Image (cartoon, rainbow, N blue to C red; front, top):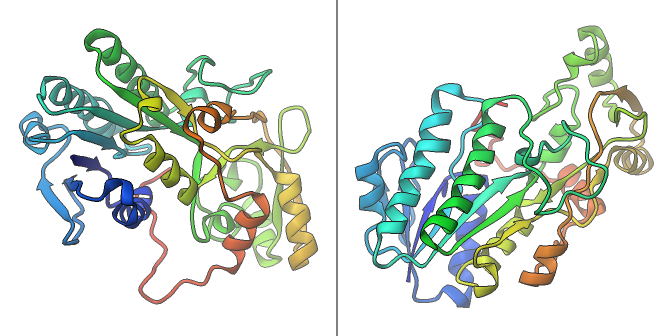
Amino acid sequence: MKLLVTGLTGKVGGNFLPEYLAAEKFSGWSLRALCNNRIIDHAAVEIVRGSLSDSDAVHAAMDDVTHVLHMAAVKESPDLAIDVGIKGMFNLLEAFRSSKTARQFVLIGGDCSVGHIFHRYDAPITESSPLRAYPGCYALTKVIEEVMLEQYRIQYGINACCLRAPWIMEKDDLRYVLSFRDQFGGPAWREFLTEEEIARHANADAVPLLRDATGASLKRNFVHVSDLVSAILLALDNPAASGELFNVAMDIPVDYASVAAQLSATHGLPVVEISTPYHSNWLDNTKARMRLGWRPAVDLKLLIEQAWFYVRAPDDPRLVWYPG
């Protein structure tokens, strides 16, 4: 068996590699990575250089491959969105369907394809909920990827699977998500607060308690990278994943009120309430639990503890590879 991976140098890829290599299930498999701007130096990884937008490079990377794990993505980068998110996906699927050795295609999708906090759902978001991208090129490309994968399955009968993940957390990510000083991701505080207010909250090490459009505390879906990796390992070469879409998220959405209460109690941090126009949604992971036997191990308490007690080593700088 030979696995081709895109996005191996990213957050998920960096956590996937050691777990994949340690798993007895994949003993005897070989691993190839298609890399463009960033390269991984590992004895167990064969590197093919090239862009996803280059059909010849993609077809060369697919040579003798049995399984594909497609994780490469760009965020709000309009100049790259078509090349990576659409043309890249098309090239991979074309090479896969014409291959004599290809057996399974696994896509890592995102809950931006269902609008996460931007669109209101009156019931839990399941795999049959409508695709509803929020504004921006990233969400649009993730919707197109899901649709393209489904249509290739219908058109050509390929064995395809999509794991739809919400915001992926690792290390101290959550701490920076909630920071007024060096924020990671969104929503951007300047959309709701003045610069003076942001500076005051930063100096106080305050914790934001976001309110949704109804005034209730905002509930948003997250998944720890280790739990997403475990889902990937379960889905690879698994007949139960054939032709399926799975939501891969924490069992319960993260409630900003619960986060604020825990950090106030454990760290004595002040809480700042912020009204937003966003919607509380629940990404239902029942199907992944039932069909794959997957269980997320990181709950809210552990997610917070890991983020607040994580200490970065000198050779582990905080890097954000993409805008947005």
